[in-house]
Length: 298
Image (cartoon, rainbow, N blue to C red; front, top):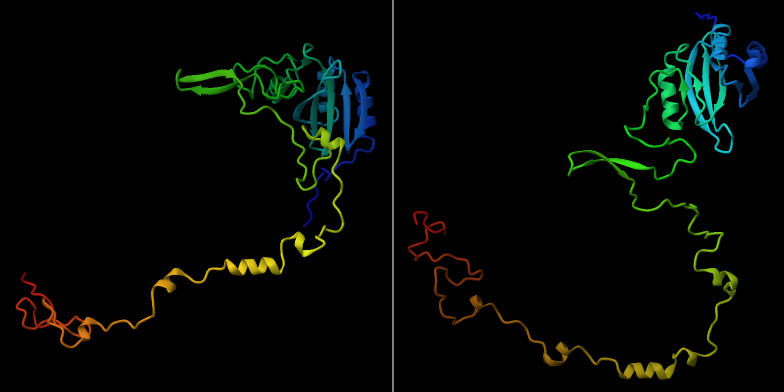
């Protein structure tokens, strides 16, 4: 059974920009559509009133996000972007206003209470002030942090770092110390080589090496390499006549028979009699039992 709902799956932007621009009137600075999004730029002093109109008269009920953008080359370097969502229309718009390090932006906590935390984040990261926010404190950086990390002119190494001191038994701040300076890498393939002159190779770049020849260079006669009949004869004279062990050992002889197999050998002293394996137990030995083991009572 199909479920019928009043909210569409998605709402196109057709005609939305003109309708909202007419509703905002003099509060609007500019309106345009880009990348499938509608952007409305409003006056900073009229921001609160413009967002209230969009919420109450055009059903943009939810404030999804407040984001900051830094353009250092502009007189008012910061843009504050308000992302709004209409649940009934299933449509989104972005409202923008601009400011600098000193001029505050009107708070919208009286329209959306959730804006309190979002404005604190923009203040912490960019340093934008919000007039009317009663709890404008840092929310992401630590206590005593200096600067605003998302500004384009914020130093890459920061100002201070936080660590626990074993000597003082407390958390301390100290200047940032890095193992190496910030470096830039080209991430080129090492087999292709760099397309720029490396330090120290300036002279090589001015006088490049000649390209390799197509055919390898060879000698014109065997005497240039030292090879030939004379070299072979000289090598044969200095060849070793044989290993020293074969020269001094004399003729090879057969190995002698085992001692136990020789006739006329005197009887071996001990508890074992002569045999082919020399392992037979002497039965006359009082210390040996019938099974050939020593007495276990010893």
